[in-house]
Image 1 (cartoon, rainbow, N blue to C red):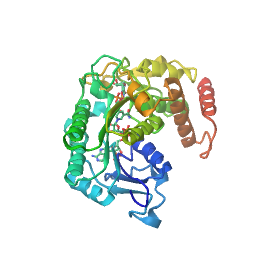
Image 2: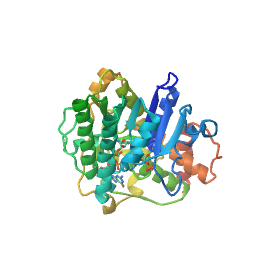
Image 3: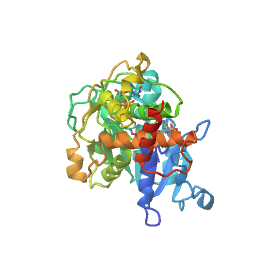
Image 4: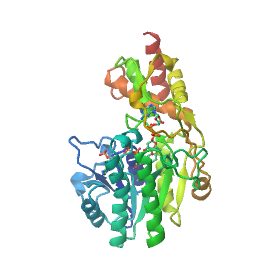
Length: 360
Ligand code: NAP
Ligand code: F7E
């Protein structure tokens, strides 16, 4: 606590979830601090709107929001950050989060995703910090276990990413049980948004359609279209993360929508919004297939609903629509089809997209 306000540290603050969580915690009047790693070009686009305090406060205790350089693979930088920030809550969202790429970079994936949280937990233990710790665990840990999956489902991961997250999940439980640290896992099923990275399948589809509409490209190449996922809205899932750390005791919770759809259904839903058949635009390429696949994810969030009072509001159809509208708006702005300050409702961009395609 500082000046009567909670202090939160977010790793992965430049990512999809980190940016929504930072906004949520600022709305709750937390002092928010984020870890960023060095990149050859700044990659803080998702959070630049929050960083308005730099000139007045710098990186001081009085600053409502600031970023500092650290890396999950650099234990010294993590300890220095904890020493400086003295957080009440740590949200460990930083990770190499792409499952497909984890097959190509397995060592660094394990280093960031499994040893990263271990470095934080060890620092908390060693420095005797009273901080609460949230670990971004994943439905990928369930792997080939049949749906529906809940907190008691066996975990049989199918990728270096899944294995790395399972190690971190167990380390979080171990440090909770062995050392009494308030360490909790949110086992989140896939969650998406207009801020989703461009190489995850949902965003690849919505941004791909928008590129087709404005004439940037003619088709989209994808891999396995049979996999089923339980897709929710990131903005709502970060509220669950916060609730997990506000609960009276540390525990593990599944966060999901209770709906599952395969990639073809995502394609159907999104292309149909513009009156198009996806079969006319989508190519299947082995380049995007993985050496092993998680066939079907469908989460049962009963425990979170009952204990945390958390429920998803945005389901599949609304999610597809809001993501497609956001990408259409972005690409239409880039192309000068709509003004750069355009602020129409989603329906406007969807209707304009449909009209543009009907004229092709
Ligand atoms: P994301 O958009 O890929 O963001 C990942 C973040 O981690 C980025 O800020 C990235 O920084 C940072 N990062 C990567 N390596 C790092 C390192 N070595 N040191 C410090 N920071 C590092 O992921 P997301 O979708 O927001 O997901 C947030 C977390 O939830 C991740 O741990 C992910 O594995 C987990 N998760 C996600 C989902 C989902 O469906 N989205 C579901 C379950 C669990 P750069 O900007 O520098 O790359
Ligand atoms: O793939 C298939 C792919 O990369 C979903 C991460 O946030 O959620 C995410 O992992 C499905 C898979 O997400 C393409 O094979 C087909 O079956 O969007 P994705 P993911 O692997 O489920 C979990 C819960 C996390 O924790 C992760 O951090 O779609 N698919 N064609 C494709 N996937 C991609 N990326 N690209 C394709 O072209």
